[in-house]
Length: 161
Image (cartoon, rainbow, N blue to C red; front, top):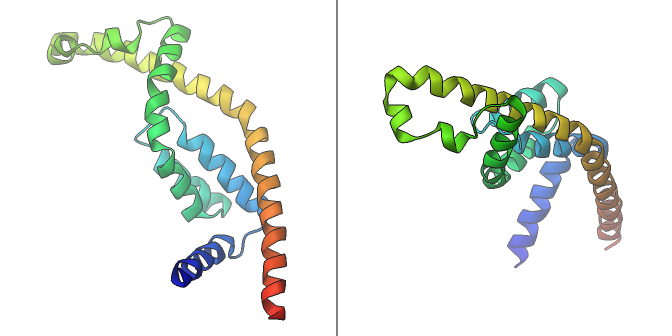
């Protein structure tokens, strides 16, 4: 049990190393939003690029991104259905029939509506992200500031021992 506590403290120190609660809240809120983007192949690259360009905690952002992957997959179809409705094209289930994918002559007719549905899904995600980001950032900042205060009190108590 003592080893588990030491590992947890070490990971906590690595997480907080050189970061303020504001920077961690920014990294956390952006990683949550990117982790839910209806673009399963590119969110890791986007998280890495954003973390490196803004000098945010890359490990935290990637961990959150990977943790949200199952939820991202669950939300992918609703985003695509809503995006298809927004773009005025058939829903992805109607587009992605096996016969349509195997028939090369119909491939262009299959991919174009799918691209419009994807564009609509990304637009809806962007609108949702713009609305959710202040809430996520505020909640993250509040929680991390409380955690930082508790952590400093624990460190002070440990020094007195």
